[in-house]
Amino acid sequence: MKKNRSAVKLVLSLLSLMVGIVWTGALIIVAFSGGAPVWRLLILLFFTALFLFLGIRGLLAWKKESLAEGTKLPRAVPIVLGVVGVLLVIQMAMYFPIAARNGRMTRSLKPYVQEEYSDEDVKLPENPRFVFYHNGSFTVPSDRFILGTDDPSQVNVVVAYSESVSNNGIWVDSATGKKVSDARVQNATLYVIRLEDWALIDEVKFHEQLKQNENGVNVLGMNGVENYLNSLGQ
Image 1 (cartoon, rainbow, N blue to C red):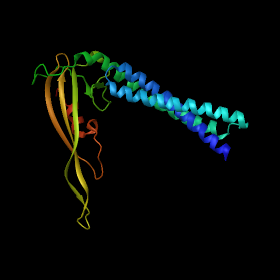
Image 2: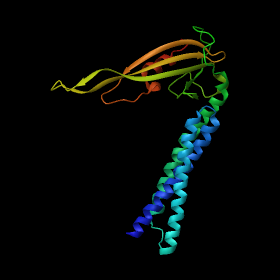
Image 3: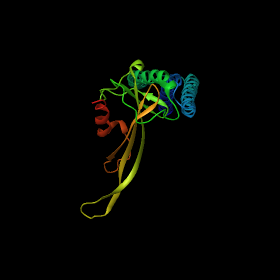
Image 4: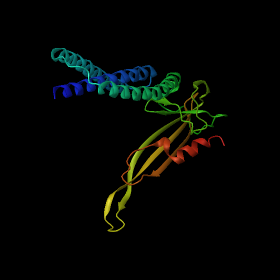
């Protein structure tokens, strides 16, 4: 039983250390992006330090205990850690390039942001190329948006957006007619902005009915939003 508990402690400590290392990388990217609010950085810093502390403390405690009791490393531990390590590397390889692109975009375009529009109802630039802007950060559009770009020098349009969820009815049981749950709709408002002078080109609203028990908001996944942005300039 002591050996089993020791193995569990070791695995948890190493997992905590791995998570801390991954979050350290994420913290560096977010910090250098230049667009993250201070409170978000502080929260990320707290959890990064917490996981690193727990991981290092657990490893030191396990080493001290194993030396005192002559406990050997269980054979299953390297296998488990190897699998987890591969998964973490895959996650990092997928996330970090995206975060780095968004960080580069935010650093390049942040100086253009203004608290108020310099003008409204202005014309769309020729050959529009856009990126998203939300919660103080710029985001490179996915390949689904044909006019999106990951090159800051090509951007001439910014698409900011707001989001919300509201009730618009109820779901009922077809057999009994009794209420099952609230029916909800996700609402999105796009603000199409000319980058060079932060002037408003267009403001358009979208609404999409959510499925039963679905509460999340995914503005960039809404069909209406995708169709609208892919038709800009046509």
